Length: 305
Image (cartoon, rainbow, N blue to C red):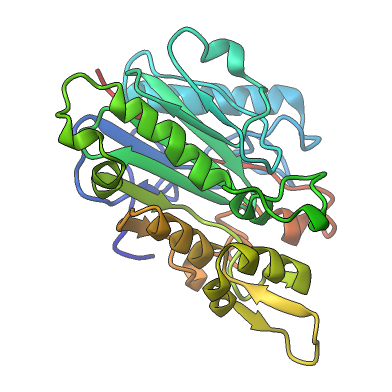
């Protein structure tokens, strides 16, 4: 796939699950599931973790048990909340006291500095983004579809324009507050520029630029924030209003603007595309109409004690 993916230990999870191959971070673990490893039947076969896609609830429950067991085999006692992604920009600060009660809460990003608390987002074409401070003390995750990435949550009118910050900006704001609360770090490490310099990001699989057709209004929204974002929209042949968008590169651009330079994973190439890799990844755009439904992948990050 690329130098930023490697298979995990086969005794913990299937080889097709993705383990970020970023520089070693003390006590930090991360994983992104594939379609393999669960009990769901077609079109959700087999490791669907979404409970809102018309899959058999008993199958979803069993898949979540298997997923949690895999995490706990790596970190005993690890616990995750399966949030409901709504294409917004809100961030939940998770801790040992609220993680269990947060299942089903409507958030598109989460952050924690508690050991054993797993930040998880679910995707099926949207981009999962994982963040980790190189101290290993703070981690976070975001679900970045075009709406969340651009700061245009459902219900916001085009005439209003995008919010000042999208889901990555909002996540990094919460992430930075967590870093600034770490008493073991120096005063110099609390500066925003220093936090960004010490943050690593990993981008998981998403709909690729060969498949992600959007209207000109989506391009205009991104350009309202950053005119140079236009380079990541390629006109569709024969159309003056349709473009192919590179979601991964748009996210990389937003992260770089925050000062985060250590960005790994999805580079927009074909192996990362959920639509083009049907045997490995779920894809709502590919399967919802053709097959009547699609499952959800999970991207997770957590820290040990």
